[in-house]
Length: 183
Image (cartoon, rainbow, N blue to C red; front, side, top):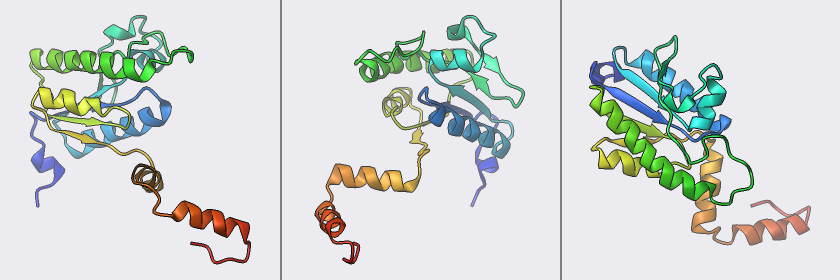
Protein backbone atom coordinates (compact mmCIF):
# COMPACT_ATOMS: atom_id res chain seq x y z
CA UNK A 1 0.00 0.00 0.00
CA UNK A 2 1.35 3.43 -0.93
CA UNK A 3 2.25 5.75 1.92
CA UNK A 4 0.94 9.29 2.28
CA UNK A 5 4.31 10.54 1.04
CA UNK A 6 4.14 8.39 -2.10
CA UNK A 7 0.56 9.45 -2.86
CA UNK A 8 1.17 13.17 -2.29
CA UNK A 9 3.09 14.49 -5.24
CA UNK A 10 4.57 18.01 -5.13
CA UNK A 11 1.40 19.13 -6.92
CA UNK A 12 -0.73 18.17 -3.87
CA UNK A 13 -2.26 21.14 -2.06
CA UNK A 14 -4.21 20.53 1.15
CA UNK A 15 -6.61 23.22 2.37
CA UNK A 16 -7.49 22.78 6.05
CA UNK A 17 -10.62 24.80 6.88
CA UNK A 18 -11.73 25.24 10.46
CA UNK A 19 -14.32 26.98 12.60
CA UNK A 20 -13.03 30.04 14.47
CA UNK A 21 -13.02 28.45 17.92
CA UNK A 22 -9.84 27.56 19.80
CA UNK A 23 -11.04 23.98 20.26
CA UNK A 24 -11.22 23.71 16.48
CA UNK A 25 -8.19 25.78 15.49
CA UNK A 26 -5.57 23.97 17.58
CA UNK A 27 -6.33 20.42 16.33
CA UNK A 28 -6.63 21.67 12.75
CA UNK A 29 -3.28 23.48 12.95
CA UNK A 30 -1.74 20.31 14.35
CA UNK A 31 -3.15 18.36 11.40
CA UNK A 32 -1.72 20.94 8.98
CA UNK A 33 1.74 20.46 10.48
CA UNK A 34 1.37 16.67 10.34
CA UNK A 35 0.41 16.87 6.66
CA UNK A 36 3.56 18.88 5.94
CA UNK A 37 5.73 16.32 7.71
CA UNK A 38 3.99 13.33 6.13
CA UNK A 39 3.98 14.71 2.60
CA UNK A 40 7.18 16.66 1.91
CA UNK A 41 6.76 18.84 -1.14
CA UNK A 42 3.01 19.22 -0.69
CA UNK A 43 1.47 22.60 0.05
CA UNK A 44 -0.71 23.11 3.11
CA UNK A 45 -2.96 26.13 3.48
CA UNK A 46 -4.88 26.81 6.69
CA UNK A 47 -8.09 28.83 6.60
CA UNK A 48 -10.24 30.10 9.45
CA UNK A 49 -12.40 33.17 9.97
CA UNK A 50 -10.87 36.64 9.65
CA UNK A 51 -11.63 37.37 13.33
CA UNK A 52 -9.58 34.35 14.41
CA UNK A 53 -6.72 35.30 12.07
CA UNK A 54 -6.62 38.73 13.71
CA UNK A 55 -6.07 37.02 17.07
CA UNK A 56 -3.52 34.59 15.63
CA UNK A 57 -1.55 37.32 13.85
CA UNK A 58 -2.07 40.57 15.79
CA UNK A 59 0.81 42.27 13.94
CA UNK A 60 -1.22 42.21 10.71
CA UNK A 61 -3.57 45.20 10.80
CA UNK A 62 -5.76 43.89 8.01
CA UNK A 63 -6.27 40.20 8.72
CA UNK A 64 -8.60 39.93 5.74
CA UNK A 65 -5.56 40.48 3.54
CA UNK A 66 -3.31 38.11 5.50
CA UNK A 67 -1.50 35.65 3.32
CA UNK A 68 1.07 34.56 5.85
CA UNK A 69 3.43 31.58 5.76
CA UNK A 70 4.71 30.41 9.14
CA UNK A 71 8.16 28.98 9.89
CA UNK A 72 6.95 25.41 9.29
CA UNK A 73 5.64 26.25 5.83
CA UNK A 74 1.89 26.42 6.52
CA UNK A 75 0.19 29.20 4.58
CA UNK A 76 -2.69 31.08 6.26
CA UNK A 77 -5.51 32.51 4.15
CA UNK A 78 -8.69 33.56 6.00
CA UNK A 79 -12.32 33.38 4.95
CA UNK A 80 -15.06 35.67 6.27
CA UNK A 81 -17.88 34.45 8.50
CA UNK A 82 -19.66 37.81 8.28
CA UNK A 83 -18.30 38.87 11.67
CA UNK A 84 -14.80 40.02 10.76
CA UNK A 85 -14.62 42.20 13.86
CA UNK A 86 -15.44 39.20 16.05
CA UNK A 87 -18.72 37.69 17.20
CA UNK A 88 -20.63 40.09 19.42
CA UNK A 89 -22.43 37.36 21.39
CA UNK A 90 -25.78 39.04 20.69
CA UNK A 91 -26.53 38.15 17.09
CA UNK A 92 -28.79 35.17 16.60
CA UNK A 93 -27.81 34.90 12.95
CA UNK A 94 -24.21 33.77 13.41
CA UNK A 95 -24.64 30.21 12.09
CA UNK A 96 -26.69 31.31 9.07
CA UNK A 97 -24.17 34.08 8.35
CA UNK A 98 -21.31 31.61 8.73
CA UNK A 99 -22.96 29.29 6.22
CA UNK A 100 -23.82 31.93 3.60
CA UNK A 101 -20.89 34.34 3.92
CA UNK A 102 -18.42 31.58 4.80
CA UNK A 103 -19.34 29.51 1.74
CA UNK A 104 -19.12 32.53 -0.56
CA UNK A 105 -15.74 33.68 0.74
CA UNK A 106 -14.28 30.16 0.94
CA UNK A 107 -15.27 29.80 -2.71
CA UNK A 108 -13.21 32.95 -3.31
CA UNK A 109 -10.25 31.47 -1.42
CA UNK A 110 -10.27 28.35 -3.62
CA UNK A 111 -10.61 30.47 -6.78
CA UNK A 112 -7.78 32.79 -5.70
CA UNK A 113 -5.46 29.85 -4.96
CA UNK A 114 -6.34 28.26 -8.32
CA UNK A 115 -5.74 31.53 -10.18
CA UNK A 116 -2.37 31.92 -8.41
CA UNK A 117 -1.27 28.58 -9.88
CA UNK A 118 -1.59 26.60 -6.64
CA UNK A 119 -4.97 24.88 -6.97
CA UNK A 120 -6.29 23.02 -3.95
CA UNK A 121 -6.35 19.25 -4.50
CA UNK A 122 -7.74 18.15 -1.09
CA UNK A 123 -9.95 20.00 1.39
CA UNK A 124 -10.22 19.02 5.06
CA UNK A 125 -12.82 20.71 7.27
CA UNK A 126 -13.86 20.51 10.93
CA UNK A 127 -17.34 20.21 12.44
CA UNK A 128 -19.85 23.03 11.98
CA UNK A 129 -18.51 23.68 8.47
CA UNK A 130 -20.38 21.02 6.48
CA UNK A 131 -20.96 23.64 3.77
CA UNK A 132 -17.20 23.53 3.06
CA UNK A 133 -17.74 20.13 1.41
CA UNK A 134 -20.27 21.73 -0.96
CA UNK A 135 -17.79 24.47 -1.87
CA UNK A 136 -15.09 21.87 -2.51
CA UNK A 137 -17.46 19.80 -4.64
CA UNK A 138 -18.26 22.89 -6.76
CA UNK A 139 -14.53 23.19 -7.46
CA UNK A 140 -14.10 19.47 -8.16
CA UNK A 141 -11.98 19.04 -5.02
CA UNK A 142 -12.37 15.98 -2.76
CA UNK A 143 -13.30 16.93 0.81
CA UNK A 144 -13.21 15.10 4.12
CA UNK A 145 -14.47 15.88 7.62
CA UNK A 146 -11.74 15.99 10.28
CA UNK A 147 -13.46 14.86 13.49
CA UNK A 148 -11.74 16.71 16.33
CA UNK A 149 -13.84 15.50 19.25
CA UNK A 150 -13.71 12.25 21.23
CA UNK A 151 -15.60 9.24 19.89
CA UNK A 152 -18.00 9.47 22.84
CA UNK A 153 -19.22 12.81 21.47
CA UNK A 154 -19.88 11.14 18.11
CA UNK A 155 -21.83 8.43 19.96
CA UNK A 156 -23.84 11.07 21.83
CA UNK A 157 -24.68 12.83 18.55
CA UNK A 158 -25.68 9.50 17.03
CA UNK A 159 -28.02 8.67 19.91
CA UNK A 160 -29.46 12.18 19.88
CA UNK A 161 -30.14 12.12 16.14
CA UNK A 162 -31.38 8.53 15.94
CA UNK A 163 -33.14 8.33 19.29
CA UNK A 164 -32.17 6.43 22.38
CA UNK A 165 -34.16 3.20 21.88
CA UNK A 166 -35.42 3.36 25.46
CA UNK A 167 -31.97 3.89 26.99
CA UNK A 168 -33.07 7.17 28.54
CA UNK A 169 -35.95 5.46 30.38
CA UNK A 170 -33.64 2.67 31.57
CA UNK A 171 -31.14 5.18 32.93
CA UNK A 172 -33.89 7.19 34.64
CA UNK A 173 -35.35 4.03 36.22
CA UNK A 174 -31.93 2.87 37.39
CA UNK A 175 -31.18 6.28 38.87
CA UNK A 176 -34.18 5.98 41.17
CA UNK A 177 -32.92 2.64 42.56
CA UNK A 178 -29.27 2.87 43.72
CA UNK A 179 -29.03 -0.95 43.99
CA UNK A 180 -30.29 -1.66 40.49
CA UNK A 181 -28.00 -3.02 37.81
CA UNK A 182 -26.86 -0.26 35.50
CA UNK A 183 -27.60 -0.49 31.76
